[in-house]
Length: 190
Image (cartoon, rainbow, N blue to C red; front, top):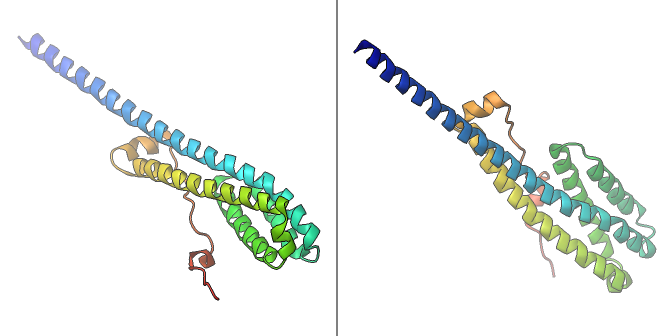
């Protein structure tokens, strides 16, 4: 009878270990899935950023033809684009893209001073493409933030935080407003 009890205890321990392995594997796989969804969301942003980076030189050249004395603004856009293209990490890209957005905003303000430029079909087409791309970037950033928030929550909550800590899962940064000026509502004056 003693051997039967030992066998039942051993079977119970074995089932517990198997159940524990299944739970750990499920949590690990869930963390991997969430991390991969976050990476995929970032890749979607990257595709749109590449499209924006490709449009900017054409836009700058078109504006340069009409507003050659606005070289400081144009050089600022070119420099911001170069930094954004060369940014090595997600954090660096987020910061560089914020600077590029500001530079593009300044460029659009400059273009308002040139009625001939605003009527140029090439400029209008480029401006429309850029606006469309900016909207796609905005949606992609929102999807990324949603995926990153889900992933970050999983790696920070119990009990998956134990698995995350032991297997090297790291939090992902979120896209946030970098410049306080962007938080302010624009003022419309007539």
